[in-house]
Image 1: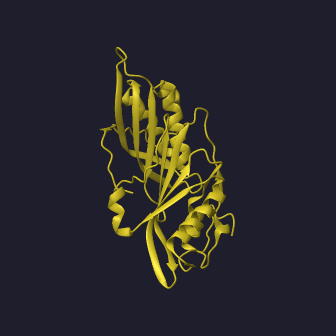
Image 2: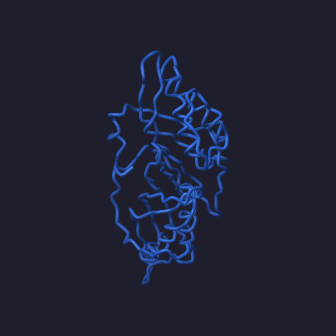
Image 3: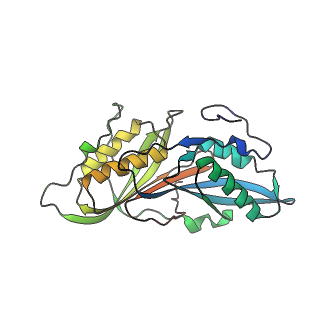
Length: 261
């Protein structure tokens, strides 16, 4: 059942760890030294004895793992558990953690909570909203050279910039992926218009969520900030959403999601 990426594949009806498909990470020069990919799985269910256990789960994958997991294969794998019986929920969590860790080549964590407690990890972004910049259907031109500091005396700022207009394209299907971008930035003030123009280049850029965030972080680091944190809260596909977090300083993993996810 390997090789599900870009193919039409029926959902397995029995436990199938072999369906998990790794995708080798491609990290740009200047990639973030710290970070996580947080995956929220809204269709997480298995059996404990004859009782159906339903949960919302969130995975934390270290950003420096050799690979990530292809989202369609993860969905198929999780649904292969729907009729599988475990002795307890903890055995299920340990099994899933072991299988996904083996796929990505690094230890991941999985935590679960009841479906009626989703609000406990739902937190909206509060920051300065960036103006949207529509460059139409021109070819994607993403370049750190378009990012500039604000003109003037070089004010040093500490700010949280937010954009709800992040759009990129799946590199396999070319379908659009939408998300909200969070940038926590300390250093010489950057020009917000140049940042908006830069981000608009992703609207027709084909890249996995993690790759886009890695590139945004790497390009913003060319402005030599004192500290930088970038997170993209992508909307869900097939019962899974992905939130990559990248930071220039140590970063604690958080299950935060947005209402739109």
